[in-house]
Picture 1 (spheres, rainbow, N blue to C red):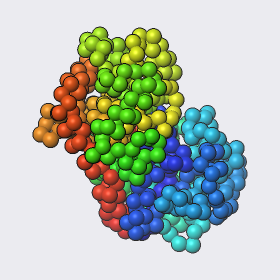
Picture 2 (picture 1 turned 180 degrees about the vertical axis):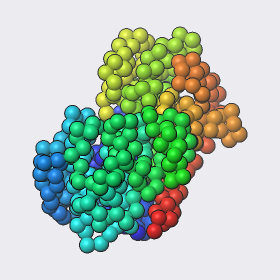
Picture 3 (picture 1 turned 60 degrees about the vertical axis):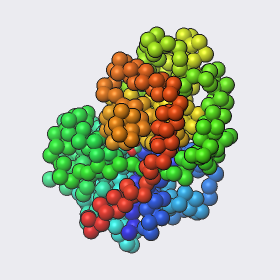
Length: 471
Ligand code: ADP
Ligand code: GLC
C-alpha cells in the first residue's frame, strides 16, 4: 500500500511533543512491514533541514484567497529515517524556526494543506490512503471531497488521527475565502458553533477517525472542548488505537544521549551512575528518590499543580525525595516553578525550556516520573519512562489508564491515582516513596516494567488493517 501521512511535526525534523514522536516512528514501522510510507510536512527552518541533502520534486502555485503563493516540495535524498520524507516550502509563511505560536498560524497551515492537496492531485497515480493528523491537516479530507479543484481525489480514503482534541484550529468565517472554492451545499461541514472548525470538519469528512488510546476515545464523547455531541454522533467511524514507541530511539542500551548505557542486567548500576551525575548537575541528593516531570507546562498536563504538590510533599511526607522538572509553557507556571527554587534544600530544581538530550538523561536517571494530566490522549512519557526502568506515577485517564497498572493490582508496575488534585498526587508520591524504601520490591517492579512491549509493531498493524478495510 502507499500511505501518505500529512503532519505538522515529525521527529527528528521538527518536534514539539508526542505528535512528532509518532510521525517519526509509525511510518518507519509501516515501511518495515513492506508498504510505501511517505511523510509530508512544512519546511520549517530547523537544524535538521541544513544537515541533510534534498532534491526538488515539485514546484507549484496555490491560492490563499486572492493571494497566490508559490510552493516547492523537496524530498530527503538519503531516506535517513526509514521512510520517504517530503517538505513543503512556502516563503513568508512556513519558513520560520518554530512550529507553532505565530499570529498567522491559520494562514500558515491552510496554505500548507492547499499546497499538499494540490500536489497530490497532480500525481499520475492515486495513493491508497491519505492519513492526516490533528487540526493542522484536518481540512484536507474536506478539500479532497468538496473543493472543485481537487475533486479528482474524492475517492481516495482519508483517515484522521486525533492526537489531541483540545486544539481545534478554529477561525472566523471572514477567512472562509482562503479555502479553494467548494460545493456550497457542503458549507455545513465547515461549521461548528458559528466558526470554521478544522478539527470538527475533519471528523465529519474523514472516512475513519482514530485517536491514540481506547479510553481517550470513550472520554471524547463526554469531554472534548465542545465537540462532545459530534463524537457521539460520529462514533460509528471512530476507533482508538494505542500509540507505540520507537524502540530504536528510546533504548537505554544504545541511547547516544547517555554516558552510561544499560539493559536489564546492568540496570541498577547504570541508572545509579546516570542519577548521580544528573543530581550533581542539578544540586540534588542522589541517595533520595528522584521524581521527575517532563512536558509542556499547561493546564491539560496539570502542571499548574506542581508547585503546590512539591511544597506539600516536603511538608507532609518530609524532605525524603528530590524533584526535577523539565518543561516550558504557560508563563505563570514557569515563573512559579522558578520561584520555588528558593524553597529547595538541595532537593528541587527546574530547567525551563526544551532539551531533547536532557529528557533522555532524566528518563534514565530518575526513579519516578510524575504525570498528573487532566487530559492525556495517550502519553508517551510514561512509556519511555518504563522502558528506562523509571516507575510512572500517573493519573488514571486516557492512555495513562490504558498503559499503567497499579502496583496494588496483580503484576502491577506503576502508581495510579484518580483525581488531578494536590491531595491525590501527594498521596501517590507518598506511596512511591514507600516503594523506594523497599529495595527488593522496587527492583522487582522496575524489572517487570522494562520487559513490557510497547513497541509499534501491534499498533502499526492495527492501522494497516484499518486502511485495508477502506479499499
Ligand atoms: P504531548 O504530546 O501531549 O506533549 P506526549 O507524552 O505524547 O505529550 O509526548 C511528549 C514528548 O515531548 C515526549 O517525547 C517528551 O519527552 C517530549 N518533551 C516534552 N517537553 C519536553 C521538553 N521540555 N524537553 C524535551 N522533551 C520534551
Ligand atoms: C498529543 C497528546 C499525547 C499523545 C501525543 C501523540 O500531543 O497530548 O497524549 O501521546 O499526542 O499521539
